[in-house]
Length: 479
Image (tube, rainbow, N blue to C red; front, top):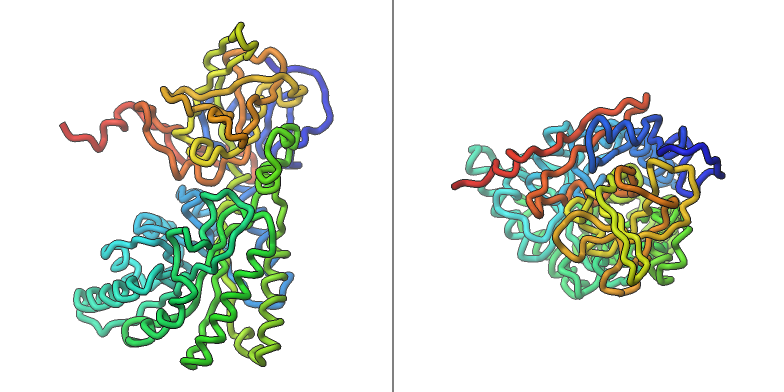
């Protein structure tokens, strides 16, 4: 169904990455339709060059400020082993949120001193694994958890018959800062489940310094939330953390090694703004955010230096590294979902044309949970005008499995714009699907999970996740 109709370069295109070749979507030199023919549909397609480019952007931001900066990739965004290997080879570190993610990070080759462990509800086994590995930092989420880490250190020492080696911990604080992100992605409010509140900070530090033979407090950690469109919350959070650091030093003499600003650097999901006016303004601002990491770092350091000068504590700032935990900004726009139109129908009563695909929210959970917008194009006719309106939906036996806002909450466009006369068999592409999709897949409706490929620097596609079979659906069941 390819067309020779020529148009200007589409707004969603990214030179040398997402392009139109022979009318088809081309990803780093790989034809999307050929990928579907070889690996079936639906299909995740990741770009190794784009991951490396996104990490290079972060490292360039760090180089633009005169301070010690470390990046820890938030593996919860996508912990596929090929993705982790690319992150490792690109020269940054990793943040994990479970024993499973810790296991994967160590297995792929991250050194223990490259790993941070986050989480609100770490099990005894997970803490034992983190302590045994000797990771860079365990971010503790409550005063109670300090004792849990101490007990883990004792258990590990007893099991090995060696003198206990203190575990490195950082205290996760909640700075009580709101952002213009999605409410479900805000983690810095007292109403969230995360962190130690400001009124408990000094008590937490006093408690954590009681047993230096068991734990060493190396830092403090905050996270204002994901997809934060403005620099001010980052700066205000850093100011708050810096003031806590100075207060702790004044009271205890203890000097912290780092302040961890967490993640939240946004991705521009609205590179193509052809349907942006169908989103409410706050959604447009969030989804279309274009905040540069260099701006975040520069503003955070500016407010910290102001506070440091006022308190004559610049020597403390010089000794304090800044850590960030980017996830979405590394992997989101490096992944696409290719899906095939399997069925179509027309509603005479409404005039709607429905396209029914093989990709549902079981492989893109945020589309249902957060009504997240993934710009959709025709991979088959990528170069043609996308001006015809369609209702687009997935295959699940669930009314929420649609690419629009069925509850009329006004978060998503009611229709998707695609070329005229789309027919079954055409391949569509949902862009910017790299984060929180592959990692959150599940077997709803007994659907085998799709394959994933990684496009390499030379345009070669490597299988990085095999497609499930029906037998895989039975693997863990006992009867």
